[in-house]
Length: 202
Image 1: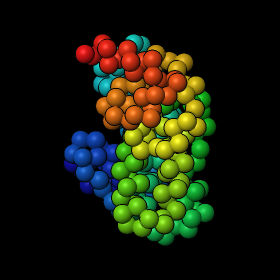
Image 2: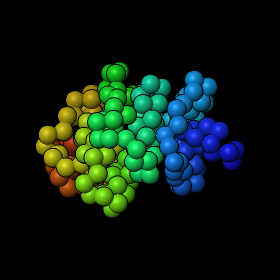
Image 3: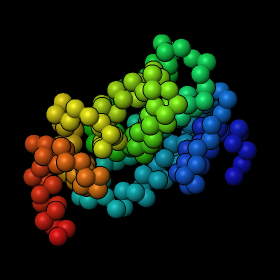
Image 4: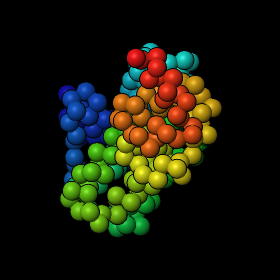
């Protein structure tokens, strides 16, 4: 791999995806337009590959959501080491997603939001009072497809975008079954699909 400091954001994503290893730097590097263009290309390539295995009709790739999710993961991962920011500054490092949170956005953002629970667990191990934990907990509650098996308060989750798209609905059910999340298996939005999926797989 090239020098990780050349494109730190891109190389962090690639190293995790390809080698299951995480680069940590002593500071959070600013990204350039060129680097972000390369990141979008990388994210699209892995989305297209994953979508080949999706049930039903896969939503189109949402590059804005994918990039936002990847940035959220990158910043969260680097904050495990970088402790220069205050709690207020930490919040500012995680801007809200400005697009429509539909199936395309949820699945595109999930490419790297799915790794946030690992960051939360590591942050909790280092310092259970870390402000980063509450920030990421809130994000995973809002983007709960990426936090299945990790997010609590299942009864308060919003499933509108999930049930409106057959592909995401089935993928959500598949992940719930894979992680054996019993409370979600009984959720009104999922239990019929869970039963059908178990019957089909038996």
